[in-house]
Amino acid sequence: MPSRSESRTQLIESLMERFPHVPREAVIKEDLLRGGIAFDESALSDNENGEVKPKSYFIFSFDHGTLPELGAAALRRPPEEIVLTGGPYELRRTVVSVRVNPSSPYRVAADDNGVLGLYLDGARISDVGLPPMPDYYRHTLENGKSVMEVAPTIQWGYLIYLTVFRVCQYFGAKEECQYCDINHNWRQQKAAGRPYTGVKPMDEVLEALAIIDKYDTAKSSTAYTLTGGAITSKLQGKDEADFYGQYAKAIEERFPGRWIGKVVAQALPKADVQRFHDYGVRIYHPNYEVWDPYLFERYCPGKERYVGRDEWHRRILDSADVFGPRNVIPNFVAGVEMAEPFGFKTVDEAIDSTVEGLQYFMSRGITPRFTTWCPEPTTPLGKANPQGAPLEYHVRLLEAYRATMEANGLSSPPGYGPAGPGNAVFSVSSFMDSLPAEAAAPEDAVLPAETP
Image (cartoon, rainbow, N blue to C red; front, side, top):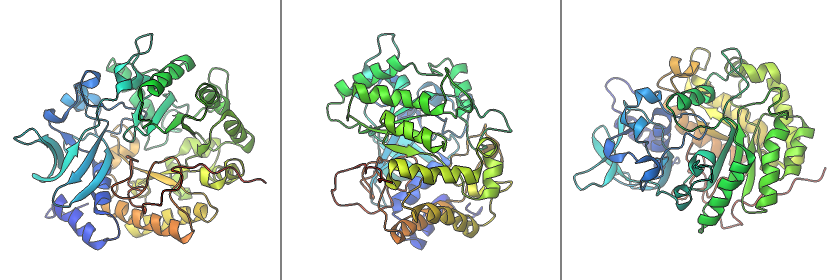
């Protein structure tokens, strides 16, 4: 955190100077992701009736306030993402997921000529572009539901995000991950009267995808992710592998080869993982959340209780036999390593721990990725850590991540679009912005599983 006498501008400029190998775009992007953005009313959307693609709340709130606390931004949604360019830092094109914080020192506002910019400490630091309303969002399903509700797209249209189960069976203080607001977000969306389907019917998902396929004539959407809350027993009579897998099977049968199929699920036994692959999934995200065993036990109590950290990691390694190591991409939540009350007290300790986890997986050919922690206020860790982790941690993580990847001879993982500053579209962390732009091999080619 900056000292009382240090402005946010001084903080980011000092980090840009200290870590010149980290793209300056990534320094600003990480600060926006960890701390949020305020929006003038001139920068808000007209929901689904305007020219700007609105924020869809595709799984978590990713906001620094509840909907009643967001004011106009709760009624006229902010954009799903923004793109930064130019300004005094000469930013290359940088796509940033929107996390609303009315008290943020960063503000998106229009100048006297109506041109949007990003302002920090009152000074304009970049131009701001907004995502255009895609044609497929202008069409509804036969039952009147919007495509945005059923199959929203993120990462500047690259990824279709199918949260087919919008709550989690890890429930309550003794089971929920302490940084996760999936269950609260479900409750607040319903309380606000917004359409927010708990379990998305198969026919609605397929109908929404058919609309996207028809109207996405540029083929901007390249991948889909199937995800939702953990299933600890059964849902609609199915276990987790069969519940999520059934959607992949139906999608691949209806739209063979149209999109790369990804699934975010728990680390499941190898036989269950094989079912995912048999159903047509090609990339598996068994997220390990936080590396340190002490923190995993306390911040992921449900995962510790039902599976356990060591078994979770064994299952991740086993899944590489099914998908191939390159196509197993577990996520961690960058920043919770430093969350009070149990987190590391220094950036050095937190980075050392995280790199230990990166080395563990990368040395085995598995490339984790990360989401920048947004301290949502309804979560225990969000309440205790409203400022999140220090920006220095996030900047140093980018440097350490790239170094560990290169030391193990790995390149950017498939399913995330192009890498490199000015090229990346992955919007919820800067790891893709911070990796080198790669030669034009078949973009996002998914490698086959290795033969045992």
